[in-house]
Image (cartoon, rainbow, N blue to C red; front, side):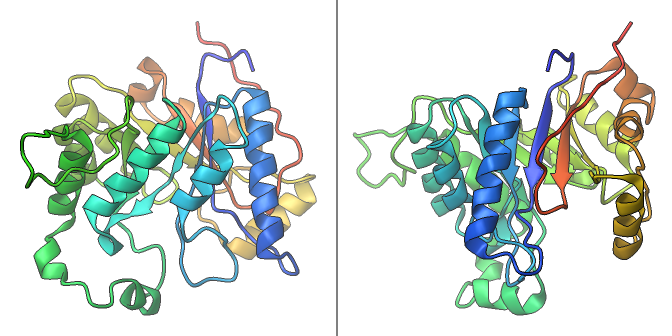
Length: 288
């Protein structure tokens, strides 16, 4: 696209009324391939459970399928809801993915449940959450398994094999200052959910300070519609507090939100809430 910014897509794999799960997967693939052709940097799939509106409860499975049908775009999770799973098993899954596609896999991890209490209870049936510890403890365990090297002289070692030559790139998804600090302390990339919280400036400053100046990713919700009338109808039906009426408004929301973003080049994750986007055209102002 010839831009000074890295643009990426986070897809919730939505299903409109009358659309099958199979078709929603085909839509996701076409979006990923179109994004790759247009020069987008990353394509991530989210994790949501027990809903007829979304088709991505298992991002790691979709990632493998999408990697096999793309060539250069990075594919990842946005994100794996760690509270439901063994950190060891997540590390194994993403080490396998990283081995399948060299230097193209992103592991995004989130703290939220990705569903309502009824699905959370089903996912965590038989698990001792007290033994698992809090989210920080779980993320530290995941980080340990991802970084550990296999030592054949230690038969009792628990290693997340196979160990890939290039591990998945690690991202913590969050909407708080605490998440920004945790990501920095562990040496993980940080993705701030600007569509969920207004602590953008504080979170970015916290991450930058404790990570020795590393850049964060900002996730901004952008609505794409065929015409203004359809756009306003969609906005009104979803009750959004923040209305981004035009492409440029959405981009300026991140670009000019505060002095911190003016001095640093942030990636933008575009969250798709529509069923499918046939064509995406983005034009950004050039930096001085």
